[in-house]
Length: 430
Image (tube, rainbow, N blue to C red; front, side, top):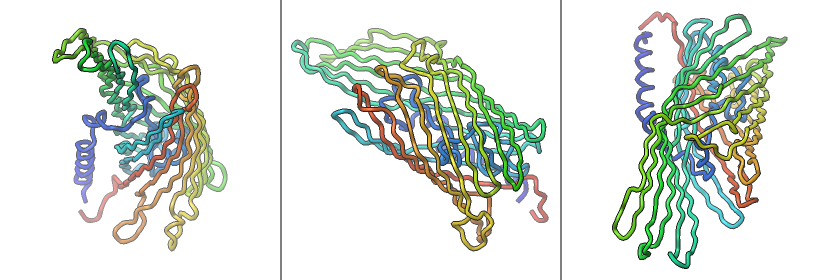
C-alpha cells in the first residue's frame, strides 16, 4: 500500500469517527448523572488514556512507544520515528447514589476519547484528538407544602458540558530531555434550569429560570520529562505538567418566565456575548521506574487552585484539589512464542483525591482503584503487532451521606483500541 493511500485511509477513518461521535454530539451525550455536576463547569473528566487510566491515572512520568499519554505532551517523544498510533475508547459507568434516607442507581454509556499520535521527524512528535473535558447532567426535585399555595415542587436540572479538541507537540532538544505543549480549543454549551412549580388550580404562577453558557476559546498546557537510563534496561523518568489560569470566553443567556392558567410570560431575558469562565492554574509532578518490556511503577501528585475559579462571574463551592496516584504495569514474558497470556500487560492503580468540591464546610474526597489489561492484537497470519485492546475496570467512591450530602459509589468499564501502523517504510511492492 502506498504512503498516499495509507494516509488517505487514516484521514477517512478519523473523519468517520468524528462524524459518529464528534464535536456536535459530544456535549449532548448523557455522560454524567451526578448532582455534583451542577457546580462550576460540571464534573471534570478523567482525561487519562487506556494504559494510564488502568494505572490509576498515572501520567507525569509515563511514556511509551505504543500508547498515547494525553496528560503530559512531553511523553510523545517516546513514539517511534516510524510509528503511527490511533486510539479510540468508550465506557459504561454504573453509579449508586445514596443519602441518609434515599438511594438510586443510574447507568451511563458514552464516548471517552479519540486521538492519534505520529512523528514529524526523529526529534519532533505530535498528536491530535478530541475528548470531553467536563460533563453536566443532573435532575433533582424537592417538595414543600404551603398552606396558601398547596404542594410546591422545586426542580433543578442541568445538561451539557465542555469538550476539548487538542493538538499536542513534543521535541527533544537534547538527549534524555523532552518538552511538550498542548493547544486546546474548548467548546460546548452548559445549561442550568430551576423551576418553581405551583399547582395548576392555584391563583399563583409557576416560574422557570434558565441560564446557559456557550463556551468557545483556546487554552494551553505544558509538560516536561527527563528519562535517565540505568543498568539492565531500567529507566527512571521524572515528569511534570503545568496549566496556567485561563479566562475562557463564554456567551451567556438568562431567561425567567412565569406560567399558569394557560398563560406564559417572559419576565426577564438577557444576553452577554462577552461573559467568561475562569479555569484555575494547576500543576503536577511524578516519576516512574521501569524495565523495558517487563514492568513500570510510578507515583503522581497533582493540584489545582479551584478556589480561584469562576462561572459567569460567580464563585461556586470550590476548594483547591489534591490528587495522589500510584500505578503499576507488569508483563510476564513479552517475548513468549507459545503463551499468549504471558504477553498481556497487566495493570493496576490507586488514586486518592481531595476534590474541588467544598460543601457545607466539608471538602469531599474521591478515591478509586483500577485494574486493567492490554491484550495484543494478532495480525491475519497470527503474528505479532503493536496494536492492542485495553480493558479497564475502575471502582470508586465520592462524597458522604453526612451533613445531608450525597455519596456516589461507582464502577466503570472502559474499552480502548490502540491501532498502529508504520510510516516512511519503502515497500518493494505497491
